Length: 453
Ligand SMILES: Cc1ncc(COP(=O)(O)O)c(C=O)c1O
Image 1 (tube, rainbow, N blue to C red):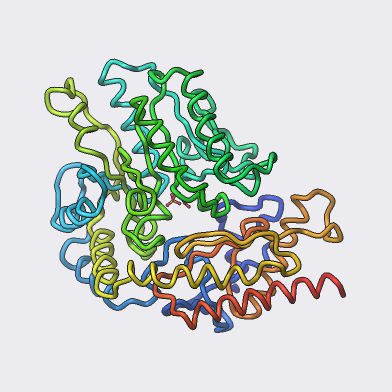
Image 2 (image 1 turned 90 degrees about the vertical axis):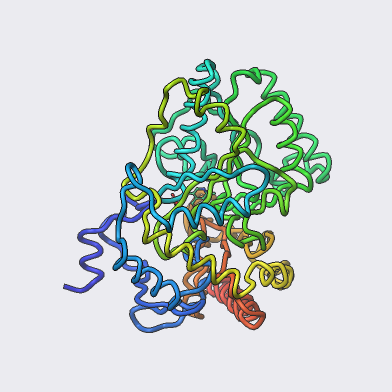
């Protein structure tokens, strides 16, 4: 049986399109990868625009990671951190704590981003129960935010197009306006729009009552929501308001951490924010093996540990929490980032990447180009002539069309509906930026031409 037949017969992928389950003839089959390139089953070379899924930092086929993982498997392939600890997790936690802002010195490892967010939220719930404030359960989050796929993490996601027949928790969860200036219906200036967002945050806090609010959770730059870079000063002003009211600030750096914006974490280095918790995943192992976690402040933990714990335990954890093989991979990734100066490299190449992508503005089908560091989005505008009646159908069709043409030209763009998100490996060179932009331009042109035939 062919591989695609087996795929259709047995597999169900994330965000499975159920009406077409088992009838897929277009999802590419990727067989190998090296550097910034993937190769499909026909050995067609593809530049990896989205960097796997915002996670491929140091490039594919790194011998250092393979060696670290293989010797770790032979030395200690598994350890249950429910009952023991091991040197790889201590080493990694020590390194991460050395680059987090403020006193975020305690690390809780999970298996990925969703479990990191879920565990962070559950620690906040526990903290309030321990502190005799069980009513303090309200969560502030944003429209277009993405925080994961487990039940509680999914409940704080604000991507309207993902709101389907899936159940989520709705009680105690409040969505604030997405900090997306280009979508402001009133067309305000950046400063006026930012003032509005901060005022909305303040009035929401006032209406719920600060003492009932558990936390505010935010990605510094919204990733899956379409690479939304908030207005200047927004992150810091939100943090100031939230802290003024004694509310916990959680920065979800699952995408923005580990170099994507040219720093280990962006909260303080880029946005001047010192959160109480930072969640991370993806880039920590450069996507090679699953790992995630959160860093939490000593001050937060001091309130709920030792004598202040009232005998409680944090009863959350996973079979693969701080898995030694994952930690070994993360340490190898860390060494590569340091040895190859990848944080500096992103700070140098990021502005060129953004500038070159903006040369696509003005092309037919291109509505907007936005981003920062090595993350960007090209938003496409669907012409009315496209198949389907609703705008959503047209947007999907356009995204697929551009994806198809870029693929033929040797570039993966993986549009989220009508938004091509780019988050290439951090090792991308100047020449590869040019290659990526040239292929994207040609792919958009080809898509446009095919509409006019
Ligand atoms: C900001 C953010 N948080 C959390 C997650 C969930 O991570 P995972 O898919 O590893 O569970 C994602 C995934 O894309 C993300 O972008």
